[in-house]
Image (cartoon, one colour):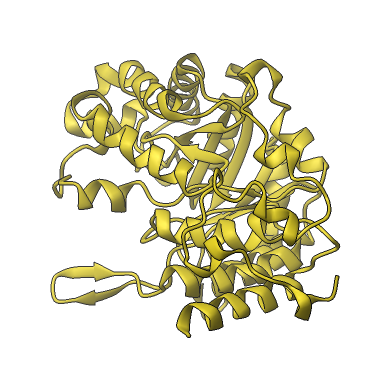
Length: 363
């Protein structure tokens, strides 16, 4: 089929794509059955391991921001997000549901600051296991079988010796407690993210690998400076990729700190230094202040278009971080799943399709 002959389904023209609406329409675009993508939900026991799924060449879509969505629903500055797993479960579940409805394959739990060391700042250290289990239960409650739940694990906010007072073993113990609670709640994945210090990242990976049977993602966050992209602790993308693989992470990547353009540069550096699958969760552009409000400038369509170069690099899992919403992820799904992955399509084909969609929607 020549690309210029492509006739877009009416749902796409209207910007009203829903998986249940397009089952028949996709065959106008692709002669290869989409049975695996659109088939009835499998039971969780039938789900293939995510690593096996990636080996088939599939591109999976992660969700977007949790904090952005909670703040829009009333989370106050200084309030503990993880406590909302217990006090506002319906809000957390609605956020997860919105990402699944956007077409995401994986959602992350509301547990980024869920280690005992971080929760202790709110006087909630003794509720560590409870809040992490509830975080997973909230996501699992709205996840159709065949979708993944990733337990989010962020930095402790403390420094390990010799830069701080914490011993390495104390940090491993804190991450172990959190990771095991996430697995007990039903997590498929432990996603260690937004890390800056390799020693802390190593502690988190060690805890997740030794204490759970979950697939382990590990991601660091980089900012652009005079020496190129570096974490706050001076780690470059090449060193990060090599180290995360050495520590035992199953999938490695970068999140936060940059928009899609910057994350593409970072992942390009990482790709030459690891044999692991890659994932990327950029912000919706670089944040700016408008009055007293932090704004992320990239619209859903702008961000989705900018995600396509990540496919050229070989990134297997795409998602969003700060400032991204279900609308951002819905557009990413349209680019890499609904319109891609068949008939020999390439990122260049997807860009042309995306341009045609924009012309139709703007006409």
